[in-house]
Length: 414
Image (cartoon, rainbow, N blue to C red; front, side, top):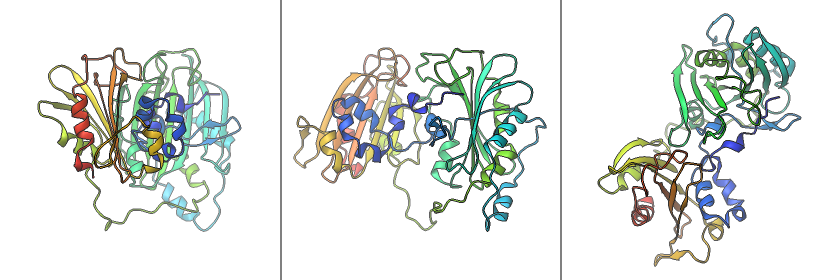
């Protein structure tokens, strides 16, 4: 069966959740660079792997929601907007389960002619999100393929993130597109790589679809019989971007999602009367840049905790990323050792200059990490490349350590 281990390729920046850092401080004591990287991003599900791995389940203990398969719909029909009606019909009664065997038969039918091996699935009554995965050979080489099913809050930040193409500054890929279907569903199709540093040329193509009713279909395919540690069997995965898009829109997956037990604690939709969101970290970072820099790429303008910019002072691209985390006092001792500088107002400052951590040739990482007395942590890093996994474009980052320090200590972060 496909060997799915999403955490192996996740950028530590994107893997780390704030709560995880607070309860794992001991793991970060010996490596400040790793700490900074691990602590820089809170729950960015637009991260490639976060989109495609959500739960641990099944006898093999594989992370399954979001490993996904791709296929060609035999009729080419667009998905029908029947999910919400079916869900409403079943609202007053327990849904009829869809078995794992039924999911396997559905995937094989949709894929059409070919050889199928190593099929595995969990149905809708298994207690975790349902999935189906198998190895498919259309005569041109074996490919690991899977489909993960689940629910997501319509209109939520998470729904937006999982259907948004990732930033190339963090995730290399060949192509990515986002489109809206006639029924209002949004689907993102990405053609990328299993390993961001391309140490093995295994290709990973995926699709993420979210319907207006919150049905979430996540599919993936590789040009090998397993996600990792398997020989490349073909130049490209078997299913094109268009076929992936059609697979994600298949009605059968929505019907299976509707057969999942209802969530006893569904998330609530934010009230329209809620207070306005704070200024995004990316926007704030841009306002604090020293003069003489041009911005060629910018992070999410809705994110209030993480941001990044790719800047150039005329000497080459330089990635600058920043994370603002409130209420970090409970791990202050782990984050800032006895050698940290203490300012007159009690703010602690730690600095680090060292090599990059994502394989880019000659890349260096300069970091200033700060924490205020109220527990607000601001950590900023700059690189001498436009992306951490590509070769350096200049000798040093575009911002000096002094400039990074001034940005991190700016009173505007309060």
